[in-house]
Every structure is written in C-alpha cells, then in structure tokens.
Length: 129
Image (cartoon, rainbow, N blue to C red; front, side, top):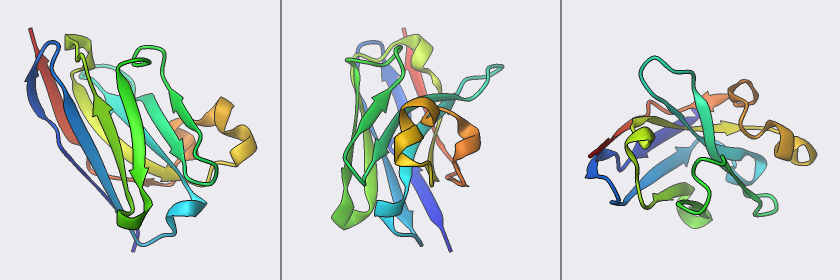
C-alpha cells in the first residue's frame, strides 16, 4: 500500500523556519517525482517544489525560490522541504505527492496536481505576523 505521511508543520513567526518531512512507503522512490503542494483557504492548490530522484533535478515556484529547499534521503524514503524566511502568505495546508511524471516533461508538469497519483494527508503551516 502506497503511503505518504507529512510532518513538521506548525505555527511560526514571520521570518522563521520550518522543515517539512514526507515519509514514503509502498513504492520505489526512484520511480517517482515527489512534489510539495500547498492550499490556502479559499485558494487553489499550487505546486511549491518537486524533486526527481531519477536525476536529482529540483523545481520551485517563483514565490518560494531562494527561501525553500527540497531534498531527499533515499535511505529513509523521505523528502524534506526546508522553509526559511517564512511569510504570512506561506500559510497553507502543505501536501506531498508522488507521481510518475516523465522526466522529460517534469519542467513543464511538475506543478500540475493532476500528474500525481498519490497524496498524503498534509500538514498545516501558519505564519504569524
């Protein structure tokens, strides 16, 4: 059974940091792209970052470039999202997802929720001013 379990969310002040974790089980890590998405109240789900374990490529939304870093520990089947210099607009429910997005299409499709087959339950991040 495929499972993705997120952790690490919480309440943080503006300018603070959090590290989210996505622990994956039930599938071969190398065969999937692992994405982080977020959804704020009243807004659509948006792609935040993506990691492709097949070639180590990473992708970021413009809104988080320079502040967020995605990484993985393949031995633990875990993907991390280090979030620094957090802003109130980063407040959202954060989800990780796994998808068999073709490597050659990742640069175009990494942030499309429809390309991901498996989703975790999410973890909530609140950034207070």
